[in-house]
Image (cartoon, rainbow, N blue to C red; front, side):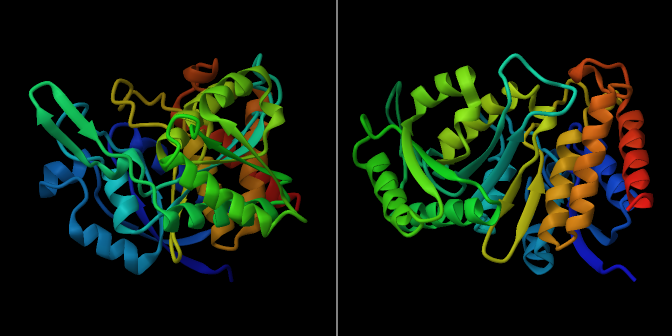
Length: 342
């Protein structure tokens, strides 16, 4: 009998409940046995508990250690602190991994893309250390530590080796931030020396990287970035393959993984039944790999590719007229067909 896995489910808000439900259905269609533990986060948690990330949610996640998480809304310029940022700090989810790959049938003018973004997840400007020092004058402190930089560099090289990737590129702005980004680069270079026989290493300025990605993303393999650069570059890279609705993501700590799509909560389309579930479904596939269910990981990815290649059940954001449920049903049908033919 298949292994029974315990997984926390955080539906989030906006389109979160819709796309996480789609991912649940695909996982069930792939034959996984999962004991789900649903927990509130984001606006749902604010309304019910007065906190976007209640302490009891953190404690349950520490116990369960694996979670599938929907997007949450973060107010702009005020309101509660990002539940995502708090979650990553509370659980020490130091590594954010976002694979960005051209989707079959949805090729874009930017050429073939197949890269992995590895983003440090716990510090940088996202430390949230801001102060009003005088009327009309604000400081925001960028925190870069040797410990975190060494840790994320080690993770990036190990990930490259584990997935048969050939090169890690450190992304920086050390020509201007010579001390902070200089420390990050120093840590990357130190780690690179340990891998020079297996994984190549180079460096690029973050602004130059953005231009080069648009011109020819195929020049890059694994990108190693600080927190803010990683957040921005991963959205840019998603645009190269057709949008945020197509790119999965995962957050890893020493003993836990939280899997979530790159996109946000999209409140403008919430409840309309047209949200694209592919990014969340592919994030669930990454979770399968993390749980040791590698056959399910492969089948889900192949099923998504089969659906996008056929172009018969695509949501409006990727050129179709299908609903979230219709696209999900199509993926499940392909997953089951692949399982039957295995």
